[in-house]
Amino acid sequence: MRKLSLLLSSVVLVIGSLVIGFLAPVHAQETFLLADGSTIRVDGASNRSDWSVEATTFSGSFQVSEGVPLSGTMTIPVRDMKSGRSLIMDRLMHSAFEAEAHPDITFTLDSAAPGAEEGWWVMSGQLRMANGSQPVAVRLQQQGPAGRTIRYTGSHDLKMTDYGMTPPTAMFGSLHTQDEVTIHFDLLLASTCEGNCPSIGGSR
Image 1: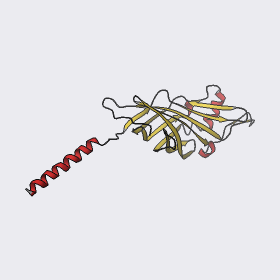
Image 2: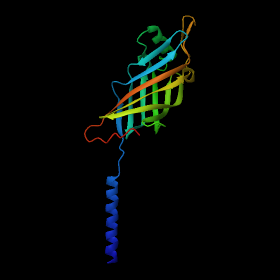
Image 3: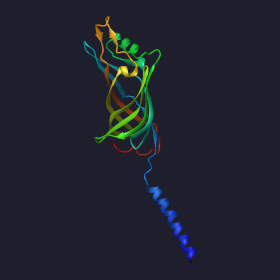
Image 4: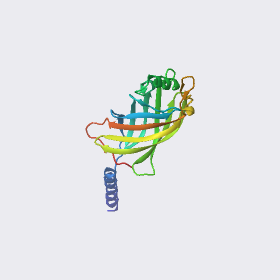
């Protein structure tokens, strides 16, 4: 009788563990790619006027769980960054980025943590461009999920000289740009999952 009681207790424990494991939420990771509609813009100023260049093509792949990018990379070809207004400005920026020697700007995501405000995240990683590489923490606001997509928007300030860049000048130095620039992100991530996909999750 004692052996039977112990056997029944063991069976109950095993079944209980299986039930708990089945009911516990599973935070599966899935791959998201940067989708059409994403934009990256760099704003700056000079002694004459403000200026902007925009990335027209870029790529990226991220591992996401419950709406949080856990890791990933993003690549921006320098020569695809254009002002849309001035070929001179485009050449100056490509020269400042040393596009021949360093054709790509890359960002490697290491981690994401909830921000102080609801729906905001602090995305930490390594930004590499021109001659430099610096750790950055970018504040992005999550919008969505909507269907199988998530959108992140935000901006980040940096100095070109921190990356070994020389702020562009023209007209024998009469035109010179400021060191500080602001990068604006509008990133649309689309899941590659097909069929029985896990829930993307909420904003936090």
